[in-house]
Image (cartoon, rainbow, N blue to C red; front, side, top):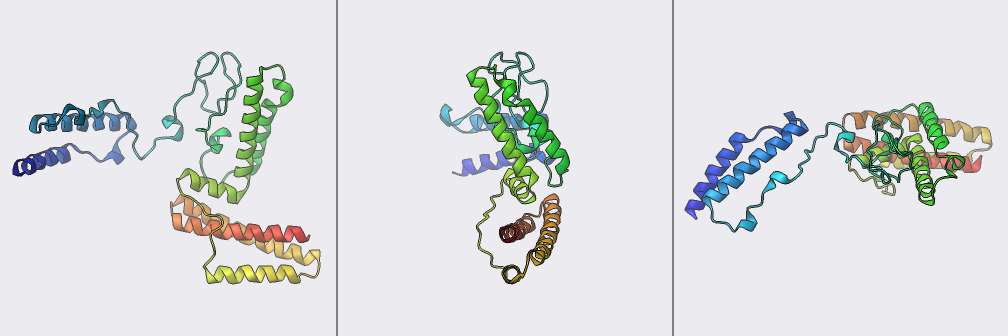
Length: 270
C-alpha cells in the first residue's frame, strides 16, 4: 500500500507538471495535449503497476472535444450526399447536392439559426428573417420538386416543415428566448408556478382590468401597456443572455410568458 501511495504521488506530480490550462488551447492543440497526457499516464502505470492489459486502455485514438467551442459549425460532422457521396460546398443548410442536385434529408444537427445563416443571438432583424424564410419556401415549392423521386419529395416536405418550425420559433421573441436557452442546455419549464408576489399582484391587476374593460378601445389601451412590458422584459432577457446570467434570463422568460398569455386573453375579447 505504501508503494502504491508513493508511486501515485510521483504520477500526480508529473501529471500536474505537464498539465496546461485548456482555455488557452485551440481544438487541435487540445487534442495533441490530451494525447500527450494519455501517453504519460499509460507509460507510468505500465511501468509501476502490474495491471491486466484490459485496464490499460489506449486513449490516444479517442476523439476529445473541449467544453469551449471555436464555432458551432466546426464541431459538427460534415454530411455527404446520400446519392453521390459528395460533401456540401457551403456551410448553410444542406438542402440540395451541388453535384447531382438531389434533395437531401433533414440534418437535425443544424440549428434554426444556421438554417437562415444567422448568428446565434437573441436580437435579430425580423424583416430580414421573413425574407430568408420566403427564399427557402420558394426553393422547396411543390411545383419545383414534382419531377423528383418519391424519396426526394418526402425529403422536401420534411425540409419545408423544419424551416416553418424554425421561422415560427425565431420570429417570436418568447419562443426565440426559450430556444436559445435550450441550445445552451438549460431547460425552461413554461408551466412553472409563479411565486413572486409582485408578479402575482400585477397579473391579477391586468386580469381585472381586462374583465372590467367597457369597450374595445379600453382593451387596446391595456394591450399596448402589456406589449410595452413584454418589450421591456425582452430587453432584460437580451442583456441577461449576453452576460450569461442564467437566473435573470429565466426570470425574464417567466415574465414574458405571462404577458404573452395576458395578450392572448385580450385578443379573445377584441
